[in-house]
Amino acid sequence: MLDRREPIARRPLAEALADRLRDMIVEGDLPPGERISERALCERFAVSRTPLREALKVLAREGLVTLTQHRGAAVAALTMDDLEEAFPIMAALEALTGELAAARASETEITAVALLAETMEAAWAARDRARYLGLNDDFHAALSEAARNPSLAEMKRALDRRIRRGRRGASVSEKRWAEAIAEHRAIAEALAARDAARLSTLLRAHMENKLAALRAMAPPPMAPSPEDE
Picture 1 (tube, rainbow, N blue to C red):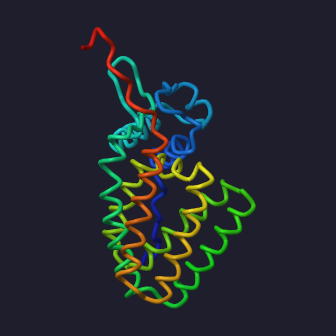
Picture 2 (cartoon, rainbow, N blue to C red):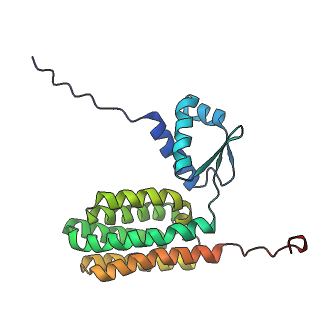
């Protein structure tokens, strides 16, 4: 008799741990520069050091964690130089996403994006920032899905892991948050009109405006001390 069993591979524990730690870093539960206590995390998640260290290696490759011999792991700082390097790339990827989504999105997807924009506006009106940020993730994920290009989506996910903390911080000010709401509304309208050129331009500008907001929030460079001159 033919054996029809088809075992489904379980998700590696290290991968699940990497996702959990990544979220903690992005949300600020593990702030930049903080030493990561392997013992505390092993106790918290009831795991051994082996999968935890594998997870930390994954995050180190993503630039979220620094690993130092004899000193262990620490949360990596996110500098303006990092953001200045990565945001233009993300802006270009978002622009391409817009072009493809305008041509390939189904009517159901267009309606879903419009509904997400409306729901984000409701979260903004209620000053529910946590809900807004989750909806923002869903909004951009829906556009990526509508673009029908898995390679493009994967490149965006990989880069987003590096700059996600910056993207989160860009909507802190009331002014920028209100601007972002208007931008998302315009993006949804351009998608509904299948205006590829406008949608591409709006998505690129959306990322450029985020970077501009982060620049405005960054502390000014320190003046050199007399000893340095």
